[in-house]
Amino acid sequence: MISPPELQLDVHVKKSTGWIIALSIALIILGIAAILLPGIASAFFTSMIGWITLISGGVMIVQSFQSKPVRGFWLNLLVGIAYAIAGCYILFNLGAALLVLTFTFGVLFIAEGIYTIIMAFTNRAGHRMSWLVALNGVVTLILGIMVLNRFPFSAIWLIGLYMGISLLMSGTSLLVAALAIRRSAARLSA
Image (cartoon, rainbow, N blue to C red; front, side, top):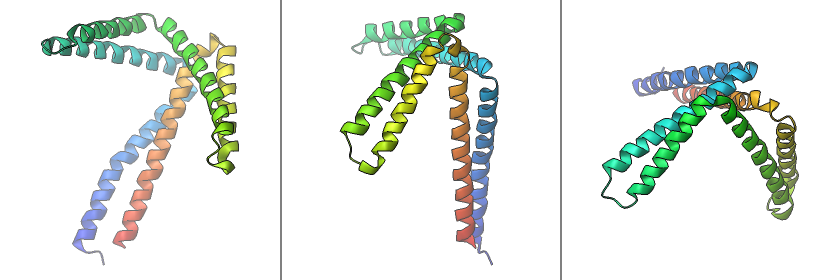
């Protein structure tokens, strides 16, 4: 028979993990939608970057005037203005912003792939795992080459696909963690 403290723990765990499970299912659904509709997802996430940049710029401008006597006022103000201008540019030029982000991702994937391959062979701390690190580098390098090889057409789908995979993986890992917590709590209260 379950005693009141264990019953409270079980109820609390189910309530807490219920929200996590709901969030994880929402993330999984959004991830699948982004993977199935990468063009729409790319435009959406790029516009979100624009809004975040614009709002950040506005906050930085306001903050710089609130802390005017503090050293660095002009630098904070200029950085805030630059953020606001960049945010507006992204929002009014989604296509160009998508091209820049995609090209940047391609270059970063190539640089990361090369760096990871070099690290796999020069810093062999885990000798047995160095082949896996090298494989990761090769895959990342190939992905970067594919992105740039298909550029500018890859701009239509890359950001949306990347975000979709990220949302899907985040949702899946949250769901697995929440279900594991529920199983552990059930074992403790049994």
